[in-house]
Length: 359
Ligand code: GN1
Ligand code: MG
Image (cartoon, rainbow, N blue to C red; front, side, top):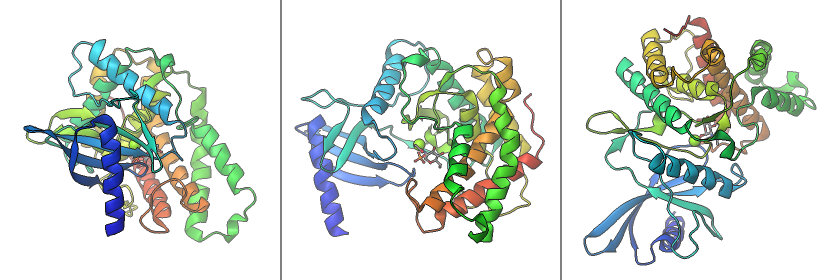
């Protein structure tokens, strides 16, 4: 543990010195959220009277195979919001360039690192309990999407191919299962596979609906909105790694997946739990307010169904990772991805049982 933390301190100091050669790292705090990258808050002393905090991340390059294209997207978006839009109401997550090379990434023996501004005095919500919170989260992402959709979507890189493409992920899942005798799996795994198969038939049909390609966040979890800690109003949209071309269903999907879930992502064990319609109505009202003008009729008509498909996709992703031996998501214990898959299936079914409509 001590060795690990000394190693971390050394790595962090080396990386920070590439951005700010004079700075001294004073404090490093691990930020324990997310299943993919390693995230730290780093407090540095730059000179007398100049202390600052930054968000430092080590990118998971198993997942983000081309880190430069991720940084190109994030930088393009930050520049667009800073320089080419008027009225964007939030702080902008902005990557720093290294002093010598002018690069957004530091690559060394320990991996690929990048540095952002640290947005101070904020909180984020892992669970949503009131209509007001749901409205704020929906509205924050709706507003973000409205502004970034002013930019040219074709200028953005696809950083993870087929990331939210249900049909291709499902085909990949079926192919992966082919050599196995499914009856030999534990009954809980068998049940999930059958349920995924059952629902997929209906949800794959959504591919026939014509909708425009948009610049989408692709990870609109409630806790990816930083809220002002004193007023509770949105202050910054974070985690822009998967900002890339996609469909609006993705972002509404991860919103309902996280905002309507009264439990943790890996803890929806109650099969009879009801979804709070008031939370849904507030979420969708907040989301659509800034987007109403730009969304097509098809996008609106299929928003709920398309959104629900993202939850099903998440069940599939967690289950497949469990069966592959937990190679993608970080896990706390061996069956963690299985429990996540079951929890997300319970959430999916609870939402299926609830009549939802947009007002
Ligand atoms: C991953 O690491 P994090 O929490 O930001 C994943 C998302 C999933 C999410 C599930 C690149 O995001 O797609 O929805 O876990 N990100 C990637 O909580 O796969
Ligand atoms: Mg993420």
